[in-house]
Image 1 (spheres, rainbow, N blue to C red):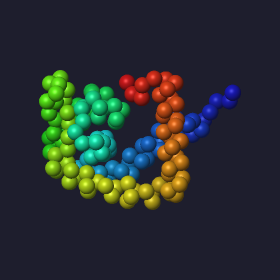
Image 2: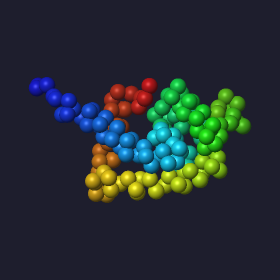
Image 3: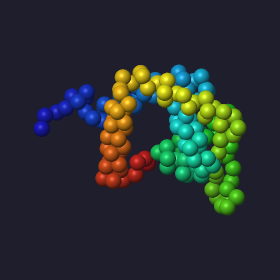
Length: 148
């Protein structure tokens, strides 16, 4: 089997696309005072409401060493609130504050604003997303956890 050039590696294509997408989001998120990982946390909390920190980490595929400082910054910014669970004192739950809900509402237009920059049709974007989801699930099934 011939040695693949860097640009021929699927892993590098995915890595490059991820970095380019994050860079495209950065200026729009900066207007809201958010980083890309904070934006993703905001999306989960908008969709699901109050969740455990553990659940949020699973959804975002982040370990606690990465998630805790992220949430601390969001809490300091007035976007989220962290509280001990009433049902289980060992659990910490996180939810959006009123300011966080306003920020989430402002952020709703970001994907629509950015979509034209992808150069994809709606159908192409849906097919690409499905292919990436399939790839992710196959790799997780074959190699274990999504993150470590």
